[in-house]
Length: 155
Image (cartoon, rainbow, N blue to C red):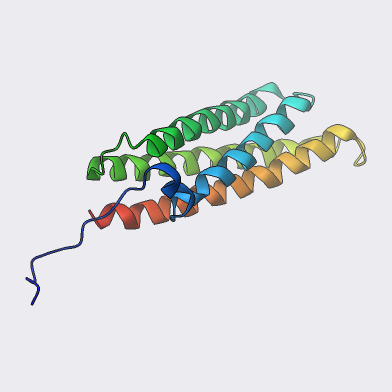
């Protein structure tokens, strides 16, 4: 019979395990959609510059940090410690918040330029695509945050 005080410990994946476990399987879609946002915003005419610069910062920062985070998990630097599970939850929560703020700013700018340029314009189409992919990236980071919180609580 098992002791009732014995709790199951969480497990952080390493190696190819990050490609088979939730939430770590979301690293690759986060990189793909974050990279698409970055590329699409970089291809557009930057007017007004300030919100677009925030979107570029968020997409580049999250792309680089997610890649580094994924490599660290792949290499097993976490040594299956609960502090890494907490850091994973915190990072993805911050990234989801940043992406949400960037998505709203990008959508606002895109709606404003709708009045000044033709709807069939290449820049407008790129902005619309960037808005959609930005919201998809926000959703992916948010889902990753929820599953990271569940995993963190198991430690």
